[in-house]
Amino acid sequence: MRTVTLGPRGTYSHRAAGAVADDDEIEFRESIHDIVDAVAAGEAERGVAPIENSIEGSVTETLDALATLDVAVVREVITPIRHGLLSQSENFETVASHPQALAQCREYLDEHYPDAATEAVASTAAGVDLAREDPTVAGIGHPDNATGNLVAVAEDIQDRRSNATRFFVLAPPEERSDAGGKSTFVVNPGANYPGLLLELLEPFAERDIDLSRVESRPTGERLGDYLFHVDIAAGLYEERTQDALEVVEDIAENGWVRRLGSYDVEHVV
Image (cartoon, rainbow, N blue to C red; front, side, top):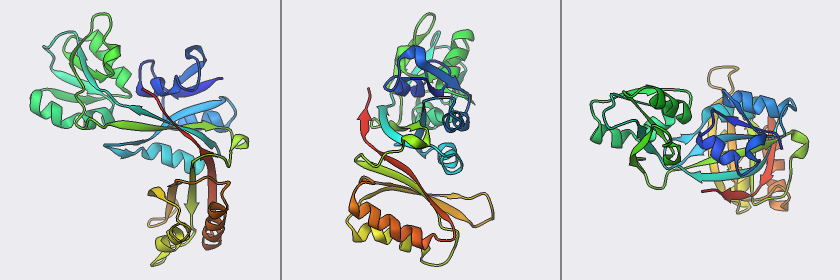
């Protein structure tokens, strides 16, 4: 199954994609938008994109792509994030990694390497590659990437031991399913007035549906216009979910509601 995710090889996205496809079926893209676009355009059967980290929160690039491109969410993969500090020796001057990884290890770096500079790069794997090429650079990545001339100077350096990332597995829109224990949708209400968000959320509370995530993002059309990304702990096949969404669609009659689909969750080490 041709699957696209963030590269290069060795990223946490690559590890998550391994739960979806064999390694020789995985291809890499340089941005999350490119991943979602490849699936929407039919160039890939599956896409794997990070949606939320337990420390740094939602991945806004993924949220924005899901609001503008028509794809289905068919699965969720949760993988623990185990960061190691990888370098050729302990004598390095710069720590290079993806901005999220740097943020997830900020307290550790401030305490143990306060004089080291930090450099944001496109991915954790790119930081590891820099460390492999330059003895003055250390990368942050999974300890398994400490191969060849690299050693793991330290392991489990993330500031929170519970650090984990949720990945959405994306498919073409025709594969959207109503079956699964969770569902995701996007609401652009096409309006803005006091109490609007409460009106949108009340139908779920009234039907005892757990809202596991609500995130607002600007529509990009006018300042002050927002849309909402919503995850619920219920399937779209359930009558209570259908009833709630009918109410939401009536409220958003001047906008739109995009049902991304229902899915189950898989934990991958």
